[in-house]
Length: 209
Image 1 (tube, rainbow, N blue to C red):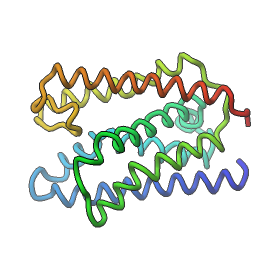
Image 2: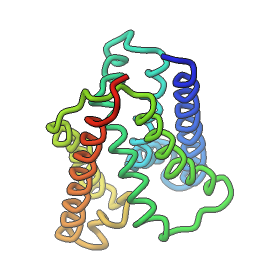
Image 3: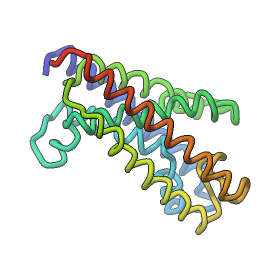
């Protein structure tokens, strides 16, 4: 990896890891007097924002170390890098157009909110465009990338039925019912598919590095 690309990877990894750590500390501080650290940790990992930022952090970190292990080979593969670009891109778009108006964070929460939903998505997408290898994706990857959000949806519904707590209002079954939650989920799935096809199309015209 060339030096500019290496430093770009360091920047992306540092931004993602620092945001994840700060959000975890803030969330545990908010939940220690009610649901406690274990359920607080479960709540933390139940946000798609956290999972997509974690994927960014791991992908950027393994870009620095290379494919020296099985997990390293996984996170340095073109398919995973493209899938992570899709996940973090959807995270940023849905937050900007749907969720940002639903609350007004302040202080440290404001900072970590901007990192998770704006800085990390923009930095990773730029990193993928400028530093990743291209012309390795296939159109079928757009379908395979639906597996991760599909599993996440199943987990969200199961956890919600157990704890009556949902991470996002558009899948809050207790508030809007299963028909509306499933309709919203189909809409998000269509967004994933269309953006996934877009990522493959962009990858096929970018220069191979």
